[in-house]
Image (tube, rainbow, N blue to C red; front, side, top):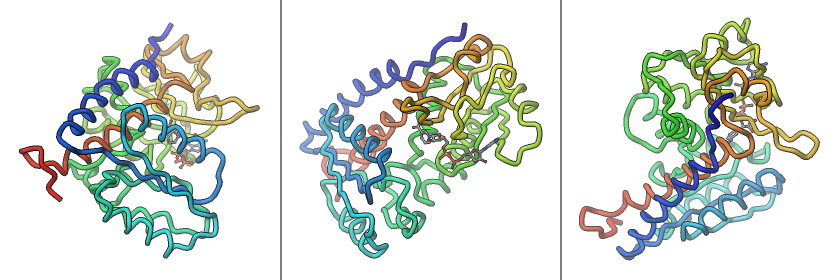
Length: 288
Ligand code: NAD
């Protein structure tokens, strides 16, 4: 039976540590703030935004959700981002994705100043990750790394296979695994003989968006299997990994729900706290 990489437990530990950092900032006269922009009324996005608000509340972070109508124009959206860029109460700005189709996501994300880009999606932060410079790392990949490290999964010299090549999960998590000295393979929808790759993996990350896509026959015995997927099936949330069969083969496995999703929110909080800490100078005085 695999060891459970329990996002609930790991996130609770991390949140307790973050609370202390938020309290220390408050003692230095700084309230930490996170602004979330939600355009339209996508039901899944509403849930994510609500959960982010709850996490802020738990830590004593000021959270402001700006709800904009679905017909908001690019100019209006960017004007709001500009306003929040200048708002010194807000350390982090997050544009909840996906945006309605008429809006240009890449352009909107590029408007957020990189220091406040707590999602780590700005091209400057993505570029820093890919060139090995310190910057804001996207929350889900960062959470996956935190989970693997906290569970003591060996990474140096190991084979890591990532299924999925999105800019928000697949590519950045591959880069983080590479930085940990894994030998990394990125698989995707056009990969020939996917199972031949996954069966070599000591660490297998599934970020596909297809329910129970990874089955036991695709997993190397003893592998660490990270399930990133969030799929809604008959009103229930299920991952990309067929948990019941894979847990019998894997050495470590993360559940859905209660796995990577918990870590993602936690890392969003961490990025926000870090952004606030970064605007304090050595004497604990705000520098802007
Ligand atoms: P995406 O749709 O952008 O990317 C999916 C990837 O899967 C693509 O790169 C595609 O090439 C690959 N793929 C599709 N079919 C495949 C196949 N048959 N074989 C191999 N690869 C295949 O999705 P995303 O934004 O990267 O998200 C992936 C999943 O993770 C979704 O379920 C999403 O909801 C979830 N997600 C969870 C969190 C979290 O916090 N837990 C965060 C982000 C995304």
